[in-house]
Length: 81
Length: 81
Image (cartoon, rainbow over all chains, first blue to last red; front, side, top):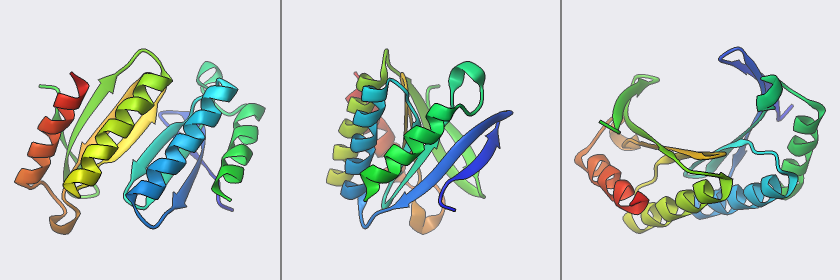
């Protein structure tokens, strides 16, 4: 229930908001997800705010969702634990 | 001309998109802006994507723009140079 599918500019995307207790913890998570994205060579949009990171996965090439997005969403959840 | 004022959920915000040549450079910039935000104790929304960082400043307390947002926008530009 944590990930939602949203349509933005006609593109289906997987989105989840993770909550943190300050800015430092939020940006630390952004960096962990960024490291994973580099390792996977698949890159999300990561919106870092005070106490919150919004992660959005989609596949640019197909302008939609591919199996890999769901795998990366699951890997993102593992980084949050 | 690089910063634009946008209204989102009835809140005026200052927004600029910075371009980079890959994901690593984008997230490095996100971290520089994040360090500045922590030093200023004023926190933007930072959307990091492949080759792109979108920085949005506004003042939560007044649900709009304060002088401090313009100062932080200028400081963000300095970090890009």
